[in-house]
Image 1 (cartoon, one colour):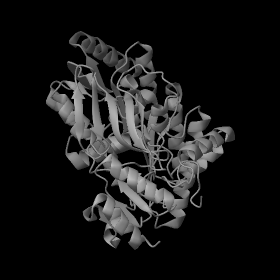
Image 2 (cartoon, one colour; image 1 turned 30 degrees about the vertical axis):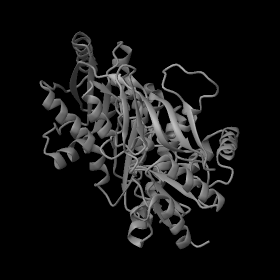
Image 3 (cartoon, one colour; image 1 turned 180 degrees about the vertical axis):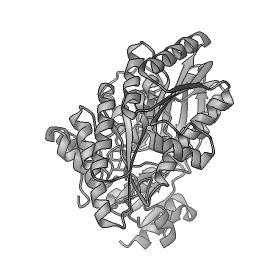
Image 4 (tube, helix red, strand yellow; image 1 turned 180 degrees about the horizontal axis):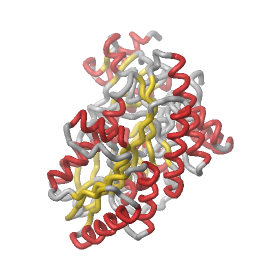
Length: 463
């Protein structure tokens, strides 16, 4: 059956206005937040209710049509790129906050709810959803769950999987299922909620989620420490945690990022340091004061050249808004940016940063490092241009070395961005074949015809 005929059948399910097939529309949904992957879908479909997803997947499964789920498209692993064509299932019109249960610290949301919209609604109840990926202005909850997203506060609060209590999802065969529930404690059978969370849209399409919430901390304080040496800033992180203090956030920005943020925002951050650490301490007033004193003391003992304390909430907010602009600064700095996402043990973070710098210096490549230093999750980004084959290949080789170094240091391929298309070769190279086989077997149970987000994680582009 030609895709024109499928378009008509899909229009009967979701409405004609919710099926797009023009060249321009298909191009819009051919890429995500990466700068190296693109592939046009044959059709773009917007469901507005779970039953739409059910009917679309049933039709696709019967006819072996690839389906790629998509939220805001902010992911940077190639995970929402429809590498096999077929249907892109865009969940952004399922964007209702269905309920907020303040008494039980939970909320039920549809998959297309944008994280910032959820946080704004929760703030009115003095609540928050801890995971905070820096794409919060566009990232949707379905995508955040699919990627098991993290963010700066993961050091203290954990990642998405700790905050998903229940899911409503549709299997690739077109069956609606509900996993988990609405209680924090639940050991009824296998933990399928955690299995689907972080599965990168390969096992099921999440349509609704029950999320665990926390009360907003009554007090916060932001501290900035400047260092004349990048590895020294990494060493500081471990010493602060050894001192018994766990800030909500510890963010690392190198000099390149700081200067770029100033250029974009006009913030006037100090530019004479090799690295900057940003801390946020939160909790009660007493706890915040105690933790802040510890952070300042350790930074000074290690050798910070300057320590700044935001003296009012507006200044603190401005600092964190500037941090959010950091990734935008990186991606706007070159025609192609190979932005990586690796996690290493905190005790080896300084050594890893030195290795990254040495790898890129030897190859005469520009690199910048930004990341969630508190949990060892770093984002080295190498500047290049895909239109210059020689330079691009050199940059790719350097990235290969960086990822191999992370594994060598006892780290992992991805801390929060996922495998998608970007890291498949490393997945096969660094993981136990039994691990890969187990994932394949699980995939076969959920998706016997292999239609849902095919070509991702361990698969190559041909299948």
